Image (cartoon, rainbow, N blue to C red; front, side, top):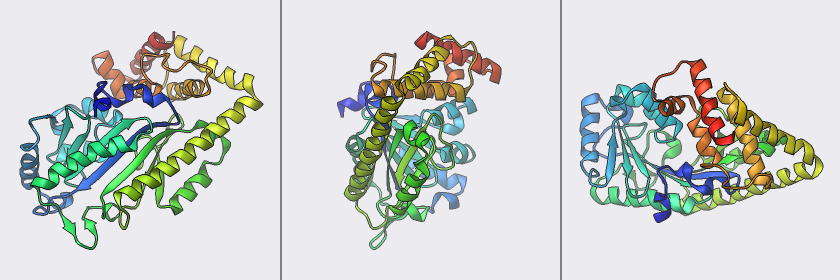
Length: 343
C-alpha cells in the first residue's frame, strides 16, 4: 500500500495523467444489523451508532465531523471527493462523520444514505489497489460488527441497487474526443444495457465538466466482487482505447487545428486576469489533450491536471486564498493561481 501514501491527495500523483482514466474508485455500502437504516434513525440513535463506530477506529484514523465544520470547508471536501453530495446535505442535519485512514488514504463515511460507506480512490487505472484498501477496512469491520445481511440477497442497503455485494467500482475518465465525436450517447445506452451508468464529475445528479465522466457499475446483486471488478476493467480498457484512437485520428487529420486549441488554452491559462470555472475547466481539458497526445511533456506541471482542476473549484479557490470571496474575486484569484502554473 506504499503507493497510496506518496502524496497528501491521490490527485497529486503522476498516474492521474497517464491515460484517459484519471482515477479508480471502490465504494462499499454496509449497514449495522441492530439499527434501522439511516432514513429511519433519529438523531439520538444516529449519534450512538456513529460513536460506536468511531471508537473502534480512532487509533489510526483522523475524525472529521461535517456538521462541525463551516459550509465552505464542507463544499471544498466535496470538490476533493472526500465526502459525497449526500453526506454534504444529510450530514449537516443529522449526526455524521468522516474517518480518514492515515495509512492508506481510504475513508469511511458514517451516517450517509447507509450507515457505512467505505471509499478508496487510487490514482490512474488501478482498481485492484482501490479494492484492496476498501476490502481491508471491510474485513476489519466484519470481524467486530454484525452487518445487515440476508443469505439470499447478500448485504442489505437503503437503495435496492446496492443490495448484494454493496460494491460500486468506478473510473473517472477524461474523454473529450469521445464527447466531441458525438458517439457518447450511444456508448451511454450500450453501457446501460450492461448494467453500468455514466455520470458527471461528482456522481449521481451532477453534470460533466471539462469532458470528465464517472463510469460505474449500477447493479451489485447476483455478481461477485471479482466479476464486478473484471467487467469494469474491460469497459475501462475499451473506452480508453476508443478515446486514444479518436485522439490519434484527430491529430492525423487536423494537426495544426489540434495544436492551436492546446496552445490557445495554454496562453489563456498563463495570462488571464479573471477566469470562470467553465473557461478554466475547458482550457485544462485541452492541456490534458496536449499531454495525452505528446504535444506537451508529461509531468510538466506542479501536479496532474485533475489536481489543478480540483484546486480551481470555487470552495477550494477560497481555501487556497485563505478566506471567503465573492464570485468576481474567485475568478480573479483562480486566474492568479493558474498564471503561477502556466505563465
